[in-house]
Length: 172
Image (cartoon, rainbow, N blue to C red; front, side):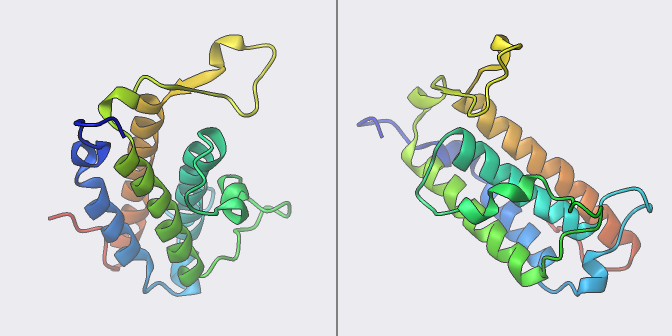
């Protein structure tokens, strides 16, 4: 952290509360509840939670190379559909562990980085030689994209829980 500059944590205050509410919504769910979907062709609650973990890990651990938390086992969670097309069989406990570890990685990054770091570019770990324009992302872009991704999919997850009479993500 640059001396005298605040960490990014202050600028993203509220994401931590959102994360806690997401964890609270997932924690009590049974296997049957994790399998709930808004429609047969849409992702289940468990698949959505798996995808949230996988996306967080992809952007912060794989793309940025942040290694303050060992998340190698979660790198494949971004690609959540099994070869047989069925949901991954993660329990609520496994999903909560993934959410907590991926959040710790994000929090460690926000604690360590400052506004001066927001323009830092991170190269694509899997560059497409046919698309050189898509070869890097800034810290600002990665943080915003991960935050909006969490919000989008958590809303979807909360909607499924709500129509099934289950507790939702309560930010009130």
